[in-house]
Image (cartoon, rainbow, N blue to C red):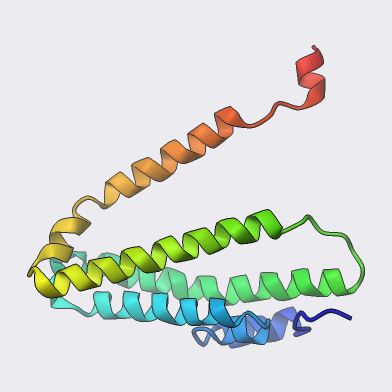
Length: 158
């Protein structure tokens, strides 16, 4: 027996349409809280006049996150069902640690942005003008990962 939730992928998907409930269905309570916080953050920014011309960007991000939540809940429920059936899946310990790191980073950045924006009028709109830097950094990280990836043994032998 496992301590993972045994909901069906379809049920998890349907409940995932409600922010946080899909993660609760899969027994991931911290992830549920994070989903609710991120969704609330995006909704509040999409309707805020403090972000200026970036309201539509946050509207699109809110919609994308809304559709991500049920898909992620379905994927997790399917993975849990495969584990319960006895299939060996890759060890998720390292991936879980990296996921926890990114969750902490995202929540910290969101909190800092909102806090500073309350004290410095227009800060959020000015800070969001630099969002392409985040894309550049993420792209550079992915390129570095690709270049540092270990080559398969047969390619080394040739």
